[in-house]
Length: 164
Ligand code: S3P
Image (cartoon, rainbow, N blue to C red):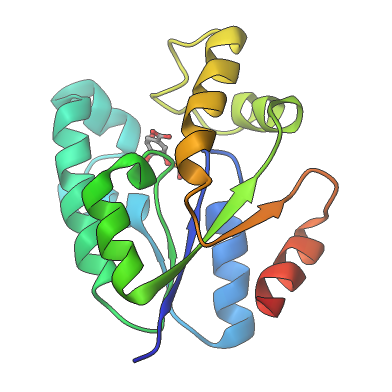
């Protein structure tokens, strides 16, 4: 059975961009869990958080991620919080290889703040974000592979993943 390649890491780490290019290069299908959720609920992620709350979002995220992880041979980008869910991590172990796109806060925070509005960050200070990255990193480190992205270009990150 062909395994899935699953990209994990903080928001702004490039999971969707890298995943899309990887899929093109390898002629595999790419699935972005956040995009699937938006289509299913018919609302943008920020609207889901605003109108239905985070608990609702996490439930849908769990269901959608687990369903997708049961597929084979695909490239999947999980949402930044999904890997914190133990049920999702357990499902991931069965038939997928996880790759953590790791950035240090110095590089990651400007990427997060410059990118599209994300509900998780809107209420956080920069100090809170450093703390969040630190706490989540302990869990992200359970991934099968880690790529230190700080000094790498997009192409170099892709090349590293292809080599795995
Ligand atoms: C989240 C990250 C987002 C999205 C939601 C929650 C998080 O995904 O799932 O806003 O908790 O880190 P991206 O990592 O694709 O931005």
